[in-house]
Length: 427
Picture 1 (tube, rainbow, N blue to C red):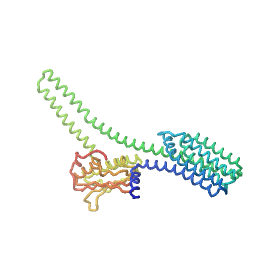
Picture 2 (tube, helix red, strand yellow):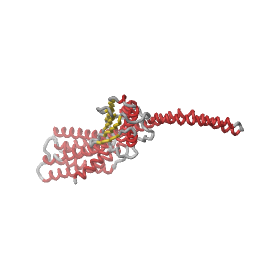
Picture 3 (cartoon, one colour):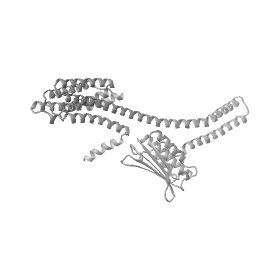
Picture 4 (cartoon, one colour):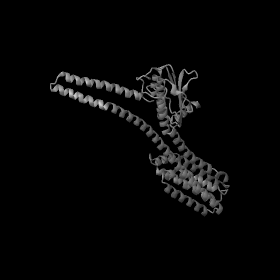
């Protein structure tokens, strides 16, 4: 039963992208920092409190208010980080409650010092550090650096002055001042550096998405430019000759002249059809060596360490190379669109018997299974390779490694490569 409950949560965590996992873990580490500093440092007042019911009651009051402070900080930290990222605001009323709790806890700790009910030179300083840590880590994220330093610094000055007025010995007072001041700076730095880290991760993810979109847009522009260069002149010629044929008919010229012009229009249209097919065929056909180099370049530009091993791929028959080139193209597209990969490897070769060509493409950071999506690029690859007697297999390990394997017989296929009817959409 317990496994049934944990498994769906684990799957939901695995379905998140890497930057989402990093952001979530960073946020929870901030919350953990607040709880650990508060409970771990304030609780040490209990064994060091002096005898009598009053000191014990004061210590338990400080500890109880500390737990309440941590509960409030858990929600406020999320708001503070969102405010730093510019996506949400913070509740200053809750910050007021938090500041009141910190002041009350500090006052009770100073009272313990005044009653001489705290043993140990560093006990009071550590307890005050734990008291201030949740507030400092939250407040330091929600406000500018200068404001955070002024407010926290003012609090430290007041606390140290209160300890001096309570009669704490100078050596202990100096130690408490150093611990509280240094701990406050650490808390502010921890909160702001974590929020800055989340902001950088978001910017990198947005830049990666923009880079992938630009790569697709560049390819579309290239195809549009080639199509324009091929069809522009022919369409202009068809328009002019059609207009000339109309004018000849309107002027009552001999029918042979109009027929000749329309015959030329027909001839240009047929040539245009052949040229368009050549452009589309060139766009659809994939050269293995070119696709390996292109995949390596675009994946490295996207921050993925891509390594290609071509063990005899250049000696494969042309139809097999074209089919495997499509596998590389679609596989690289899948890495960009469906994974948060840090590495990718492509291996091309033949089996020991030399009868089949083998291509294996692996990457980490897989977010979802692609093998069962109808109409995806992987389905298109299966159709292309099926025409050559080949197969495509996908496998996803629990570690997030995705493997794409293509097997094509060396004696399969036709001279013109993969059929034009194959699907061209990327997975």
